[in-house]
Length: 429
Image: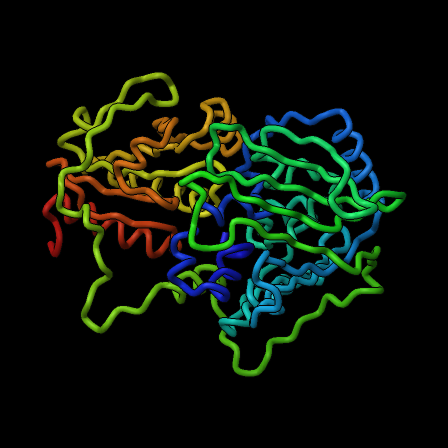
């Protein structure tokens, strides 16, 4: 989720404001790993369906397309650094693309090699290019920010982009700008963090997407000391071909090659600790874990009291959360390997319908035990303000550690296994 909102906000408001925005950031990212995407249950109005069909048919007919995107925030015109948030996008079927932004990760594929890099970090990595647009969406779509939208458009699958997957309804209306029709996406009223998203579509024979307007709901869960509304403006749309585009990339002098650009960036964003000093612990560490009783996804009633004597990993998450989808398989593997030590994993889904979670698990082929926190009450008791939020509870019922966010597989394995050993009295053994 860093790709679309968190990184720009870091530049505008500083790390203090950004740290309070994780749930907001996750809701508005425009791409999602389709291997882990839940089945869409969005209700599409008749007029909206006509507009979507017209958009899909138009983009599907193109060999490729290019555009540039800028971000606008009401009340913050012309702020220093805003131009760095601009993103240029150039995609040609089946697997050539260039998605570049100074403030985000960038990607270039010549059809054979894929280069991922960060101007801010001066780091890069290289890997084989995805085979086609479907593989692009599956393998790196989530990290491409607005560039992933163009991938889904050229596939002719606008409904598979993240805002549509998360929306409850889509309607069409006359746009706020002349010559545009708007597709307005709204969430189920029970979802208190999903914004209203409006796609401005050009009228006429070429239905280019001109803008995406985002307005956060006026709820405590969605409020943050940052922008509650923003707009992404797309300009200079045109069809693209391999001959008209440049899909080559050369490493700048002095840049560092890394295995994983995203993980490297996430580690770099963590505040540095003085030598010999550990990261600050949550105030809940060492205290009894708040009691709860929740229904599991398969209808069983599970209480924390019934788990006493085991090492319990609680992971608060939601299907729309990209870092959650990255981190949960790591936690599942840890729990499986440490089962003989009495370790159990319970993921706690926040404020989502059971059917949606079931569809997600089936599509992901995950064997994941899930507790349903339908109103978020248990999440509130555990102080969850952003997800993933992982809590390790010892056999005595006391909290051993709290981890917020996902910093990569290596960090999670080290941190979680260390916490389990501490809970079992094996620390330092």
